[in-house]
Image (tube, rainbow, N blue to C red; front, top):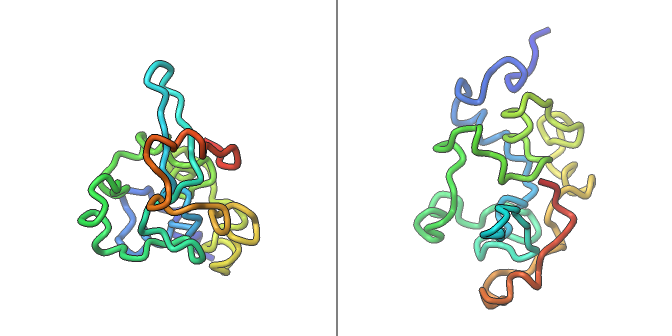
Length: 147
């Protein structure tokens, strides 16, 4: 029996479909983050990008996200060594760090809702950025996302 692609290939060797399937649909990368200018420490907020669908935890306009949200980051254009801003649970970060995908990851479980049942996703925990003034972001720092 052949090992699954994510155990056989590096991130750089994956084709587009394989790469995209690594996204577990947690939506955590779409939460606004803050960084302390003095310490460099990062914080996740419970404020979601205006394009994040709060139920599916997927981008509501993925093909045009960079056009609609200019500071949206394209992981495929980044070096895996720069994935430290992603949550510790993220499949991209886990593989970049040499860790396996979690048991609840949809590629492992075979169920796209397993990430939500495991309590890893942003489902039901966010407020859309349209409803938060940028100066108030620090009021929305959360502790349920692990770096």
